[in-house]
Each structure stands twice: as C-alpha cells, then as structure tokens.
Amino acid sequence: MFLCKIKGCNQQIEEDLLEHIGKHIEKNKNVEKCLWEGCKCTQKFSSSYALAQHIKCHFQTPNLECAFCHVLFAKEDSLKKHEEKHMHENEKKSRQADRLFFVSEVRDEETENLHLLLEERFYHVSLNRLLKKELVRNKENDDSYNDYLG
Image (cartoon, rainbow, N blue to C red; front, top):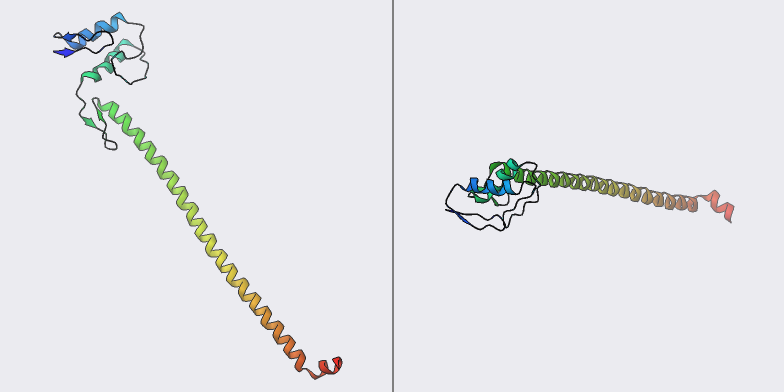
C-alpha cells in the first residue's frame, strides 16, 4: 500500500502506484512541473514520460549517497549530476588556489630580488662614503694641496 502525494490526492493506493500516477499525469497533460507535495525540483518536463520518470524518484528509497556532502538520492543519474557539481566546484577552487600560489611565489621572488638590490645599494653607498673620506684624507696630507690653501 502506497500513499499518493500528488497535490490534492493523498489517497492510499493498493493498486500499482505508477498506474495511479499515470492517471494524474494524463489528467493534467499541460502541467510541466512536478505536482508531488514537497518536491523542490524546479525543472520543466517536456513530456509526460519525463515527468513520470521524475515522479518515480519520490517513492523510491533514496539509498545512493553523495561522496562529498552525504545527501541521499534515489536515482543514480541524479547522484552523478549532483556529484559533477561538486567536481566543478573543486576544480574551480583548485584553479583559484593555483593562482594564489603563483602570485605568492612571484611576490616572494620579487621580495628576494628587492633585498638583493638593497644590499647592493648599501654596499655602493658605503663604498662611496669610504672613497670620499679617503680622498679628503689624501688631500689633507698632500703638501701641494696644503700649500695651495695656505
């Protein structure tokens, strides 16, 4: 015995539930959306057959579990579609992480180059100061320079 949860029905069905649902679909031929109470599916169905196939998932036991988020599914193709979304999310996150690591590596390399340039600049400034001091000292010790000043 099954309970039909097509909106407005709620009958206990002793006969074939698929046959009973087929009657609902036949009666509502122009309806493109699922009429099952509580269905969150927003898909529009192009044929009565596609709608019937969808409605079957409501009374099948959901025993297929998503490896990523552990949501249960009754149909394998629904599970595969769902898991593909997770795969695409993971690929996108992986690409973003790769970009961040690349930017980080470039930054580290540029920082190292900057430190080397600063060290080289410090060396040249220090060398320049030493040379100026030496030049002044040499001029002070040079007699001809002192004679010129004196």
